[in-house]
Amino acid sequence: IHVLVNITMVISCFVFQRQNIPKDYKIPVHYIRREEGGMCWVKLNIYYLEESLKDLSHKFGNISSNRKDISILIEMLQGSRIKMGSLEPIMFDFQCHFRKDRWPTALYFDFVKDFLTAAQLKEFSDDCEPPPCPTTQQPTTTTIFWQTTSSTKRIMSEVLERSLLSLLFIPLLAIIFLLFWKLRSRRNAQDLEQSPAQDELFAGTEGSAPPTDADTSEK
Image (cartoon, rainbow, N blue to C red):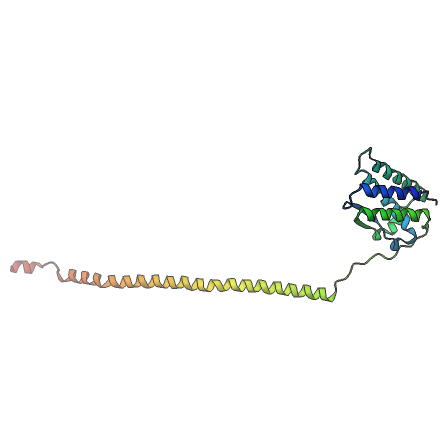
């Protein structure tokens, strides 16, 4: 496989591009690191690098010199990718090693330059074995202990809060009972004050009974 890339033209293009793109601009990338890709690093990155350059070219106007220079790089990559044949099987084998990031301009073009240099020197192979996929890190004993302690504290806080709320009802019930007892006592006292007056009224009425017929005759 021959990758026809003019390194001199590419480097001069990089210098020009860096001067025309803001330093704080972050370029999205989808890539595999060299230590994970091995001798298949060029094949694994060429498609996503091509797509990344396409997105970058759309940031400039149709008549911009930046867009024209980037288009030259895209055409080089397309020609190289076609000569490499189908890349889908190998990209599928390395799928778990792909990463996504956003790089500043300088880092991005350093990556592109390293890629084109490796392609020019034919640093790639048709036979690549992917390394084991990264495994999810298991929680450590410290993490489990912290989670258990945090859960216990939360439960104790809820219990304490409910206990405080229940304690607030006790004084409230005592106040209600005291008010009820005072009202009941006052009502009982009023009933006792009214009872003697009623007895005297009934007693006076009984003492002045109407005279009988015998009493009337005697008079």
